[in-house]
Length: 267
Image 1: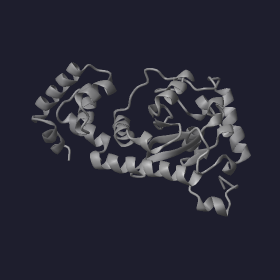
Image 2: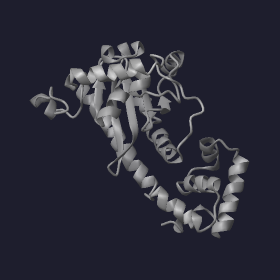
Image 3: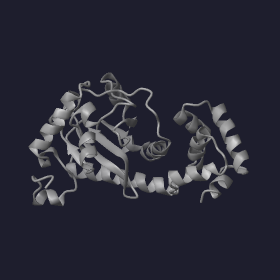
Image 4: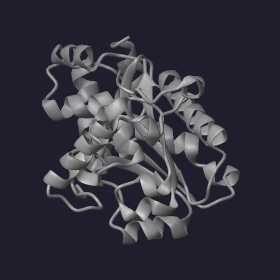
């Protein structure tokens, strides 16, 4: 049994805590962190390669979470990471974000077990479960004053990433875990509503019929999913003029006028 400390009360609740993890497993995680020879506060992957598919989820997160501050009366921060644990979106009050920046935590920070030790994100990545960690249970000293809850984001039974919500004060754990679960479910629902599913491999194969270049395929995939020229440019590290040129070439090769006509060819 992976979590032998689970008791009847744990079966009722829907999240893991550090008490549910085998001591041997905790030792193994700590060993992986200390032998990785990385900074205690994580490695920062400035200039990491952006995955166009995941960027669509980041866009949904920004839209769904922009008013979160209005509903949380205590200091907090939220981190969205991809499946490798790399932070792709961070938000919270300005003073909290400044504190994170002072700890070298930002977009590109990797929260994996090897890079950041035991934290809510890394434990959620290892277990694929909703996790709650209290301050002293974290490896990084910075988190000693924070309660952190992290959940996988599942879309069509596939994990796309992880969402962490951290509070500076003690929280009602039932409420906090329910809030994170609700946010991730809403993100998954919103993503599916805004972006009708199309398999990327199938999409790229269809692009071959129009003799699109590799770069045009990348632009076309994001364009299909309703990203603006500005958003595509930022995601692929291109200028807006270059994106505009690619879209013009895509439209010409596919013999379409506008995004809606282009999407019809792939439905």
